[in-house]
Image 1 (cartoon, helix red, strand yellow):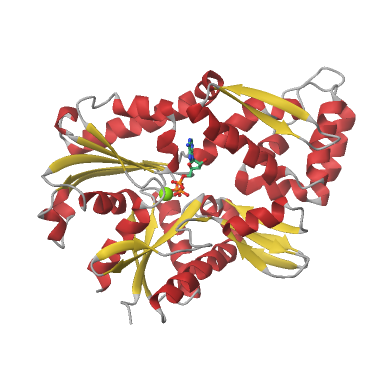
Image 2 (cartoon, helix red, strand yellow):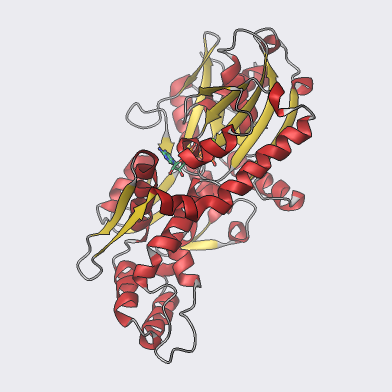
Length: 418
Ligand SMILES: Nc1ncnc2c1ncn2[C@@H]1O[C@H](COP(=O)(O)OP(=O)(O)OP(=O)(O)O)[C@@H](O)[C@H]1O
Ligand SMILES: [Mg+2]
């Protein structure tokens, strides 16, 4: 029997599960041997089953009738958390859907362990909700409740960047003052931690953590902004009414551009409103595309194309969002410069958070000797440039971009439960 504890990194975009085996942290295979599972749930209306991860996204993309949910972590602490959503004839709470997903991760963890696992360290961003301690506590409470409902009895939390620091520390050979950068899908988190091979063996690390800060900005925000700025105008956003008195209302465009709000556009009420908006629009043809996309339940696929373009712009100078639907056929070209302009204000807020983290630590930036990067959004060149410019002397270490947090949570679970 393996020890009955693990670490779960429930991410906005991807999740991992970590365990410790022979003293070494490892990630549990979650889907076809792969250690990451996209945080996606698909309620298949054709066979009545619920699917997770890549399979969920693939089924949805294959036009199987059903309901896809993504970016669920962003619901924690928000007003959506108390809402239910209609899944065929049932009303299901968003928190219950998060519970199904955690339950699926628990099943994989238990398969790996060969028995029941009741103790878990759950990762959490430094702030689920920015500058609102009450909403933040509510968010953690909701996650804990969802995990408890799935049968976890001993639940501890750890900041995601601290978990990443524990993973990084495994590789350090001398004492360093490290800035840990974890920019994911929903949040950007930073810790300044003193790491060393000796300190790694100590159980109480409070004194080694000089500062922790986070902000609710991540890759899904960049997807939303990119969609609003470069794709939604192709569907009528920011176009005037026929009488030229005002622009079309923005809210449905924002919903369609926001991962966790896409399903809100798929209601009968929204369709009635959209038809009225098309009637009033000077560019009825563009709103017609919007309606076509809604009728074909193409919203998540469109958001996926936008995300793909964003990722391509990490390597390329330009990329295209090309919608192939007859009836809504268009292509929007986005350049690297266009992306950078669109996300500049958000990246500045992220960079300001790093500055504040350094100020909190009470050390000069020049004392930071290492910057450890993890999380998918640290690949974005603008984000790297801006953050690294604050400590140009530090060496830059790239972690396991999708796995560091899960590995570190496993180490933390060993500390807390072994
Ligand atoms: N090469 C890339 N360039 C730009 N963005 C990328 C790249 N690869 C992945 N991303 C983005 O990284 C994000 C996912 O990162 P990650 O899996 O670390 O997040 P997460 O752990 O699920 O989220 P969080 O920790 O915020 O809850 C997505 O928004 C994805 O689009
Ligand atoms: Mg993460």
